[in-house]
Amino acid sequence: YDRMGIVVMDENRLFENKTEYVVSMGIMVKRDRNHPSVVIWSFCNEKGCEGSHEAGGPRFQEISYRFDGTRPTLANMFTFGDLLSNTIDVQGFSHELREDLDDCHAKLPDKPIYMSECCSCNTMRDEDEGRETVEDNPRYLYTQKSFNARCAEMYTNASDGVDYAVGTMIWTLFD
Image (cartoon, rainbow, N blue to C red):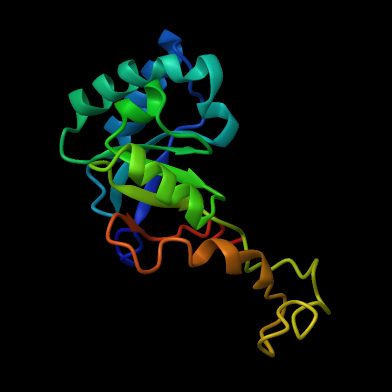
């Protein structure tokens, strides 16, 4: 990814307030910290960020900063305003609408927001072949084989037009 110029959100998959998970996060940061393509460390993904799991946030933040204090941290979450949200540097959101971004900004006005996962829209596996035209997105005629654009409409534009939220990560760059 470094040579291609692709920006990477490096995401840990085991998140909880357990020493072996914290150590695993540290190993990932040490392994990948010299890759310029990595721009942010992500502690967890979706449901794995919630409930009792979020108690691991401060330890994950500490080990990430210990091995690389140059990159911000985030969690790809459905929620905000909890312990984990108040620990990370950037509020990540998974599959959330504009109203949720507005609510988060009202509650956490100084926290940057990143749409860290919105959808998986482009596939190379052809499982949606035949649905890539008008049935998929009635506003446009798509001719690209296996393009599933409707899944993205509500989410990809959620951060448009506001100065407190950026981006939309489509999670399958290469499927």
